[in-house]
Image (cartoon, rainbow, N blue to C red; front, top):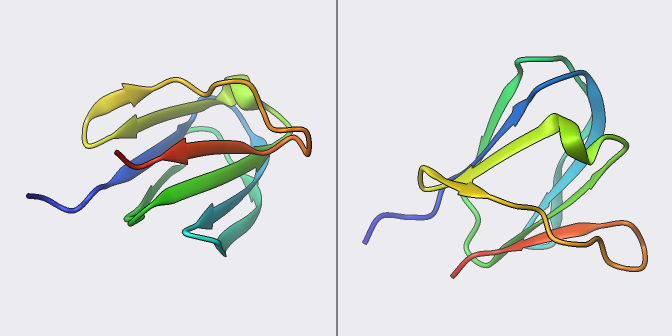
Amino acid sequence: TMEPKLVVRLKSDAWLRVSVDGSVVFEGRAPRDAVQEWKPARFVDLRTTEPAALDLSLNGQPVTLGAPAADGQYRVEIP
């Protein structure tokens, strides 16, 4: 089995904070067309000012962000 790979592409400038398996790996502004790749074992938490700016895929399959948690954080679970 291949290890999970989550790719985040930005459709416009946005501030975001990315946590992989509970550790913050990125926090700051990312420009339009930036691409970030992470290899989570269990989950990725995203917090952003512009959820619509994020285009996510997990192992090449599109990921839809569900509703955020009460604290505004989105979680992507690794199946």
